Length: 148
Ligand code: SF4
Image (tube, rainbow, N blue to C red):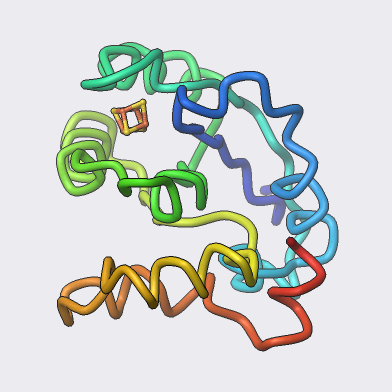
């Protein structure tokens, strides 16, 4: 059996023109939430947007990603760092995990430094509930600056 982890990425439709530069770089370098695969081969088997609030495409994209072998689905860092953050993160996570039995990870690339600075000043993530969501993508100062 292959040791390669197959994963899908869902991006926030506000960034639908994004070509995936930060996510793909982080995947290659195993930065941010992809650090969990530091000793593993990975294969990206799906990449799409939620199709806009309230994320109607999430109901359908899982079928295709899981059909293509996805074992893990990542909700891109844009859902966390957008202004405001996506209000449906927990809904998406619960639905995908329940409907398809996949692991759902919040985050892809490290939080860019400017976003961390602005959200810190806004108090966006003051609620402790954000702690576990931020931890995999918080990274260190140098890494965050590299993803600005
Ligand atoms: S905020 Fe959430 S539901 Fe709205 S476009 Fe972004 S990911 Fe989709």
